[in-house]
Length: 224
Image 1 (cartoon, helix red, strand yellow):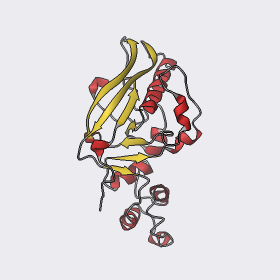
Image 2 (image 1 turned 60 degrees about the horizontal axis):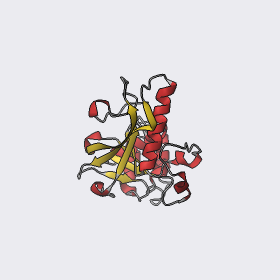
Image 3 (image 1 turned 90 degrees about the vertical axis):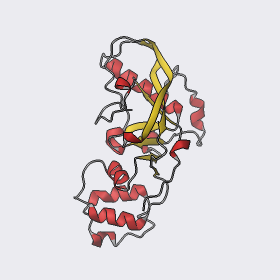
Image 4 (image 1 turned 180 degrees about the vertical axis):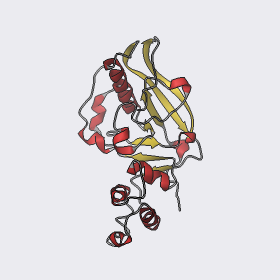
């Protein structure tokens, strides 16, 4: 049974990019910057931190410059959006316990042997990260394990403490972020929300625009 762990209407989310192509949210494989295709799957990536969104807007701008695509002056970042979810959106909190019985059924359907699963206790199968690792022992599924597990559990997206932040060491100055706040463990590292079903997004608006002078530019590379 699926349980909504988070009230989506109370979840403030932010997204940093060059801009939304045509004012639409599209999920594109292997696009943008960050760790999307490597760990969490193909999703529309958002953060509960506006500063984190600003950082990724800065990074995707730097990537565009290196590729010779950027065509505007800026304040060190491009655009930052505030994302609103539908009241019916279901977001899984990866830190909350899963239903072990449901997880066993999912793993069996994914091809993990029942004999192997019998060595695992329910408290182990209630941990999202351990369950995602166990999928590697099954052959009857495909794609990214984190994305697959979130979807098959019946959720539109997933709230997670992104492990890639653990070794993060790039804190650029002059882009409007007070990096002293990163010393507060309550604020940093921020949690990521990977949205796999963009139909669960009710709307979005630009809340910070770092573009000073806009020229013709390809905005297709905006995934993070």
